Image (tube, rainbow, N blue to C red; front, side):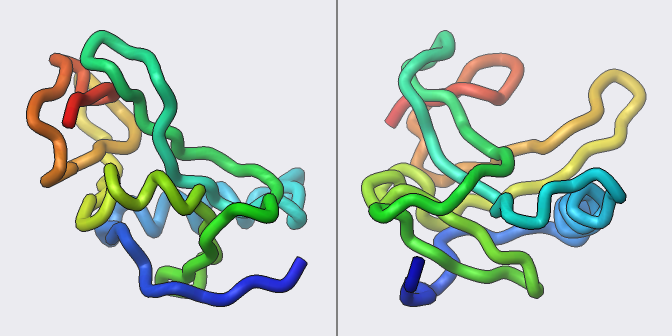
Length: 115
């Protein structure tokens, strides 16, 4: 599938990049999968973040950050432009953290938001 690279709508901290690179270098990782960033309806604030690995679809925008190819539905850029993705390894929580300047409110756990 041919795609045009766009400017990355999101940024990753060094910690997030390190964790993503660790995941894709695992021996059992399917190399056909690409990092997908997006949103979906749901969660206590209305929209939830999507961050996982998926196959590219025809209506995806494609971008690259520090050598990591990523995909996002074109319509999701409106909600995620300027967002920073971090990875936390704290005592109480471990996982990806979304810092979204477009969110007018978010839930206590930080996985859903409203615009």
